[in-house]
Structure formats: C-alpha cells, structure tokens
Length: 67
Ligand SMILES: [Cu+2]
Figure 1 (cartoon, protein in one colour):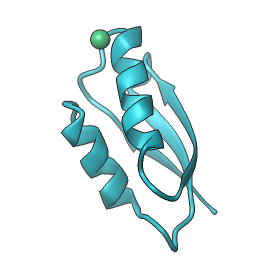
Figure 2 (tube, helix red, strand yellow):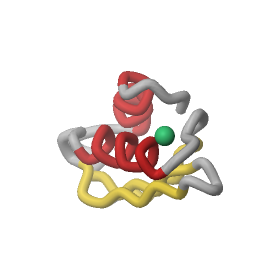
Figure 3 (cartoon, protein in one colour):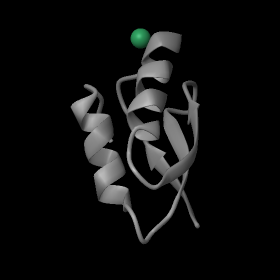
Figure 4 (cartoon, helix red, strand yellow):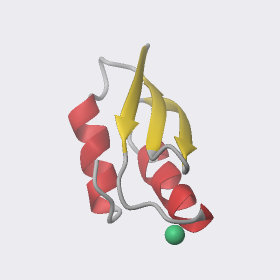
C-alpha cells in the first residue's frame, strides 16, 4: 500500500472537498482518502499495483480541480 499526499488547488468549500473526495475514491485501487480543505491537499492510500499518482491526479482534474 502506498501513502501519498497530493496538492489540490481550487477547493473553496465543503462541497469541493466532497467532490474531490468522491473523485479520488472512485479510482480503482484507492482504499482511503482524506481531503484537507484548509491545506489544499489530499492524503491517499492506494494499491500501487492497481493505480498510481498520475491516475489519481487525473481524476481530480476531471472533477474540475488542479492537482
Ligand atoms: Cu466548493
């Protein structure tokens, strides 16, 4: 299991936080997500045989935020 902290730009409220959380959770191989609105970052636990940081970042971008 890999533990990674990803910078997320553009979150301004709890709704954004939830959207980012949902987007990352939907990536296959991700087991745990914690999105910190104030710090603008997401802490993600994922199985490195199933996904990677780039894929997770792409999911964040697809949700409308910068990673
Ligand atoms: Cu928002």
